[in-house]
Image (cartoon, rainbow, N blue to C red; front, side, top):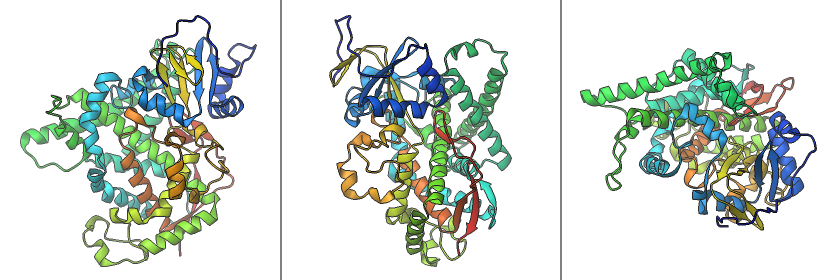
Amino acid sequence: MTSTTSTSSSIEYPPGPHSILPNKLLREFIHNPIKTLMDIAYTYGDVSHFKFGRQHVYLINNPHYIEDILIRNHKNFIKSRGLQVSKRLLGEGLVTSEGEYHDRQRRIIQPAFHPTLIKKYADIMTTYAVNMCQRWQDGMIVDIHKEMMHTTLEIISKAVLGSEVKLEKNDEVGNALMVCMEYFNRLLMPFGELIEKVPILPVNKGYQRAKKILDSIVYNMIKEHRDNEIKGIQQGEDLLYTLLQAQDEEAKIGRMNDTQLRDEVMTIFLAGHETTANALTWTLYLLSQHPTVADKLYEELDSVLGSNNKDNNKDNNSNSSSTGSKRVPTIEDVPKLDYTEKVFRESMRLYPPAWTIGRQAIDDYKVDKYVIPAGSIILMSQYVMHRNPIYYTDPDLFYPDRWNKEVKSHLPRFSYFPFGGGIRGCVGEPFAWMEGILLIATIFSQWKMHHDISHKVELKPLITLRPKYGMRMKLEVRK
């Protein structure tokens, strides 16, 4: 697929839904965006077209077309309105920035996320997971989504900022984040841009308060790190310290200023705990619904972590204590936790933390036999693609064993893309994989979980895919 300039005034549109009622489809999308996109994709095929008001929208549900858009022809697209709105909070971080600036920033930041470097964060991940498990009691009912949000925030704060977040501050940060997410969702609704133009509205005041809280935390930590550098105080190996030093002399890219640091740290700080917390919550829910899968997971964890061998822990002082008879997993265990990785991978197939990607065409662009006019919005939904029966047998079934080497090697690249892909793919993907596997192993080596059947499970697709009412679980100590 290549970008092209259309000279014809007549455009052949792909098939798609139409209604004589104005904005009927848009109202359906606002009410239930995932169902709307699922219905469109499986009614009209790989490429479909519809309108939201005057805006032309194309839904792409073919992995090869998605690869062309995100990789081969990515320069013909800018990010769609959702991420433009996110700039209100994230500034010009990697998730929201465009063009040459994005390329420069990624060039100096990406080395900090090399898998060999992020391995040093493994002990931080398991330490806070153990702390969480030690707060639990047998028979306790908890909102496991809230627990995951707390713990992943503690992990990202320590790993990125080199600072611990107190539990009461944790709630404040979590609430501020939720206010921001809800605010962005409102702005994406029809006439949402009008909300910003009335600053006295409570929703605007609430957002500004939430942003101030988050900005204060990040700027304070940047100042503390800079002050320590000036004073010659030895600093830890947190990511903020790494970013402070980051530069590329060959490309003549110098160190970042405070605003650049703020935008990148805010992006990593928020995206790095929100997405993983959601992915883990859905994983724990799925395991509670599939006892056979859970039993196979227990079997692997017992085999890998079954003995509290002092030799295994002598170099891991922060995690040398074990809860029960099993030792705490380490980075060396990750390659051995094959089924644990499959569980996490399958969970993110069914409930990808980022559930859709949007792009806007700069120039006319050809897909299959159709020309997509400049200015059109292109949607590519991980949730929809991951349930495509062409690529997944029994796509709604939670079946981790589907991820054998043969299947992984033959699946098209963008039939599975929970972290996006291409030049704008998630730079923190290696961090998220390691964190997910280590937290699942730490938790399920000691605990079983039973979903509270009186609790309603419903999707809340904001920028990320949250459980709408949290996730109530009854905890049971594994004997």
